[in-house]
Length: 223
Image (cartoon, rainbow, N blue to C red; front, side, top):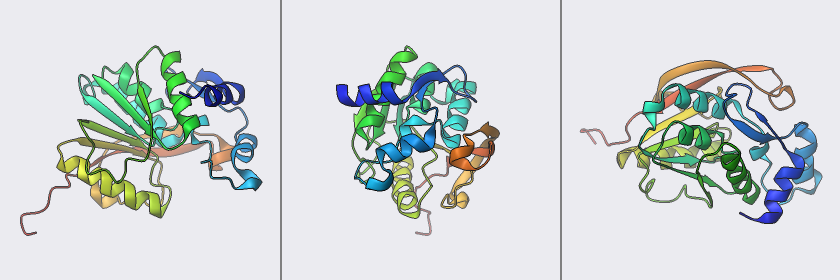
């Protein structure tokens, strides 16, 4: 974990309970728009937006589901994709996962995941990198992804990776608050929640959010 990135997270985000998952505390930004402008804004740098600084609806719902259904991850190896703050990864660790790997393309997000895991007294292996073109999910037995279908390009890459993961035998769960690019016909609904969200980001105070399980990506018998 970069000390500079860790210092940035500590400076711009405050450790506080998550609205829908109060068992978990995260470093969260009090004023989302200001931080967004600081990290990207007018300068349009290559730095990704600060997804790590907010508890997004999809992640909150997925974390809630994992904590309420610990058998989903207990004693299993878990991969949390596009981990952001690490909320889902922390929830999986708290629910008894054998190992949790959280992957992010943003160095500050990796720092936030590490800090948040430490604040919650759990171990999460935070990793910087883009794994979506990897041939499978490695040794993961459960793959979790919160709020990842927010753009067409991301959705297409994510779905291909998740389907490969199911073919390798992993169980894949996704939390999604009705984003436009979620291919619902590929999924089975597991649970639905009304999740509190920052109005500055979502234009509403509550989003109905669904936890989905990806159907097997194995080819059909007819080809």
